[in-house]
Image (cartoon, rainbow, N blue to C red):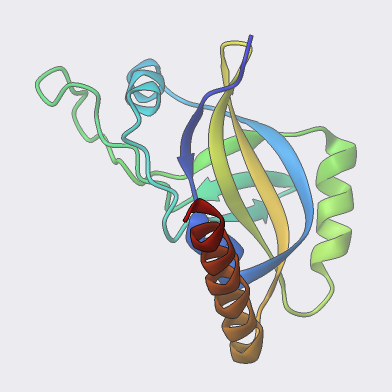
Amino acid sequence: MTSTIYSSNKKARFDYEVLETYIAGVKLYGHEVKSVKKGSASLRGAFVIIRGGEPYLTNVTIPPYQERNLTPNYDPQRTRKLLLNKKEVQEIEDKLQAKGLTLVPLRLYNNRGLIKVEIGLMRGKKKYDKRETIKKREAERKIIRSLKS
């Protein structure tokens, strides 16, 4: 079975340098799963925090699947627990002690019927690094355009 990408965080790859990636399960309600599969989840501005030895996904917006069939007090931006091994969580915590590192979700996707999130251990890019990324992208576009014509 192929994996389907439901949402990706393109801005994170532009703003941060990806050092390492991890795959985690996400603890969701049933109607949230349907909403994610519909493609309405947004990872913009999302990040991962570790509290009490457990990772949590914050600022991910998952709107309700059906507005009328909504449970009262539903918060589309609630904090959701990530499912990782204790060994992985400890490894991530140790690496986060380094200055300037953060955990950012990169994409939400389907893996054998389960919704997974790919999180990246990231370091912020400097302004000149971002300019370099833009220059590379423009050069690639020019090459593709010249090959087409």
